[in-house]
Image: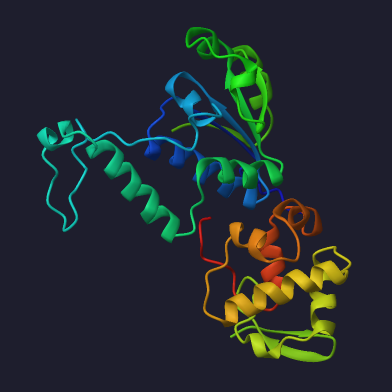
Amino acid sequence: MSTEQDFRIRKVNIICAKGAIEDVYATLVMGNGAVMEGIETNIFFTFFGLDAIVKKRMDKLHTGVIGNPALRLPGGARMPSLLGVIPGMESFTSWMMMREMEKLDIPPVSEFMDLITAGGGKIYACKLAMDMFKFKKEDLSEHVSGILTIGEFYAHAGGEGSQIIFT
Amino acid sequence: MPQKTYAGITVDVNEEGYFTNPSQWTKEIAIEIAKEEGLVLTGQHFAIMEFLRNRFLGGEALSIRSINHSGVLDVKTFYQLFPGAPLKKATKIAGIPKPSSCI
């Protein structure tokens, strides 16, 4: 008989409050990775993160080109923030990001959510943020299992070996 | 290097039980490994394992997304066939290394 405790992660509850490509993808990669490991997975989108589950916006996310000091030009030089004001720069940068991810077999947002929900992962929207941004249930993608209050979120997040992650 | 014996054949595996030499694999071996994982293999299991093996032997990365391109079954069915961690289980039973992909 072993008396060793088992500290394995059995459940993750990931909160995504931002809607840039890198914020949403960090969430989706972690969420899908958990599902692939057989870990129970809940993903909760709130504030600007809601863009990732709004049907008309989910596959048109952008990455910020102003005030993003880690952004580099091809070749590795820092991208001056001033270049970010050039019309189309944000769209171009976002397109480049998506193209590079596609090369690594990272799917578009809606397809990523297909994979997560196919494996039993659950996706939720934040009620307060929905009210604030005036979104209705019909605006959300079919991947969304429900609209939760923060109290309901905590109720879903309970259990042994459960972790809450804020991306 | 660790070895294991399945269906009377001794095979080379790593510490986690994944094959290090995929050519040692046979269907009879797969049935034995599946038993260890608590699974009874069907034609669908073998069909998707064949896809995974061909893809691996062809030098292509294995991802959960690639299952949808298999033409054999979709990701949802894959999760049902190999409950828990399907890509890890399926590659183990299919006699190929554990995928190193995060996707």
